[in-house]
Image 1: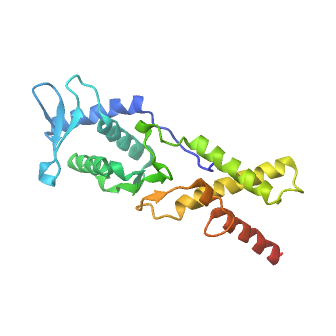
Image 2: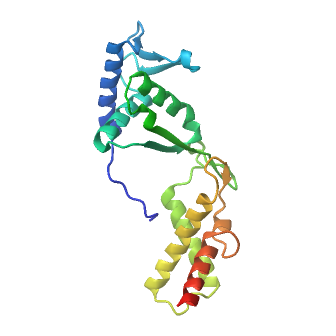
Image 3: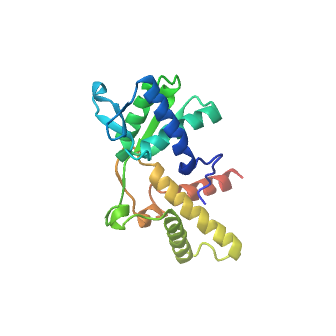
Length: 222
């Protein structure tokens, strides 16, 4: 619905095995160390951080283990010049650690890792938190945007001469345009308040207003 697609999927259930191989390689090279309980750690104190757990005492992996495996797999598959992670700023520390570990492992591509960090999104009722049940499901949000676009467009009487298919396509374009623009116009490093009603306003600095102006300009050119 947003016009995004994916070339490849990397499943956590597969990547943790590769991650464990990297951890073993780190142990062999003396980059990591094992505690008496069998857990594996890396010492990052010289870099101003702390000791990071890589494998639990029972041999099970943690998030960083999977990310180590995924990073290597993505690089091997794509031979990319930049490995970009688009993840919220609550994970800044995690990706700083990930990059540092890869560099300690002497992978020459470690410097290509880049965390495109973005700030959090608030609702008019407060911060979106999955643990508190205030998280917004993407599908529900997009559907609500289309419904709001439908309501406002009908009230303005702008689809009286449209077929049902044409009108539905218009509602989707307006709703998705409003959602994309409202989020993209804010600097990703800044915290933002997402208000669905404001985003779909047909006046002001909004997606629907810009879409209307573009169409009007095209009519004038023709």
